[in-house]
Length: 397
Ligand SMILES: [Zn+2]
Image (cartoon, rainbow, N blue to C red; front, side, top):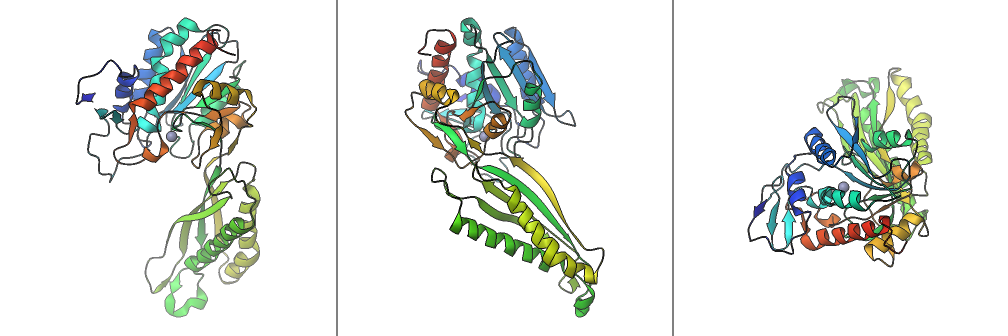
């Protein structure tokens, strides 16, 4: 670690492990296997076996490991190993070399979310020394930043086990607040195929850009209606489901009626608001209003809908066991919701109640000069220390 001042006795135990993990460039487009192998070897030295589940190419892996008895449910600590790119960002330090400066650790992934994983790994020997009937599971995924692409395989593997965790704590950066809710998300790509022709004779062509524009306008009206009419849930910001078109591409030259146009849109739904009928609505509009008109001119015309990333929302009831536990561990009196998504909804959908609670702040994530304060690392260690008391039978519950 690029220490710029002498290491004080108050330096949290996990800082050395944060340094190790930040040094792996696990930008989502890269393999995460070096980091996964490091974690697996670290746990193997403690006598803990890891199970890996790979992506189709074998270039990335999730890791799942149980500390303590494997035949009891226990508590899962979950995090993602990948980080967002640093491309085009103006960093003052090397993003893949953790740098301590004025009570903060700078580096890509320090807030989102290698510090949580580092703290869990640092506490692994303590967990093994204290664990009795309640095992602690580590679940570390790949490709969360691409839309939770890795976690479904991890969770499918957990579902095939004889005993599943009773609950899950996702260590995404919440400033150690206990978060019980976030929106779900569906990403889709729409590809409009028309017919190309000379723009002097537009009646012989089908203009894919103009058709796409009608779909984009339809989605825009849908977004306005949701904002006006709800449904609403005051706990979320904004308190309604949102629809948004983020990219569009089409056409080759001004004097050619464009054959192709592709755009991408997303729906961020309140946890209790099913996005499927919204997708059906725009598809029905395309079928009824646009396709007949297109096919009258060109039978080969079409509109394709390609689902991309998706994850469900999270809405864990405030009276759940996992919420009570996390509040005790975080010394929190209340709960909160966040606007960003996590893998929590996927665990919840698999019958494993989840909350989000981890060190650092999302405001520092995904940016140049990402950092976590040493105070937040220490707060996370206090949280894990209380978890040791709970599983060791010395705690309140
Ligand atoms: Zn994250």
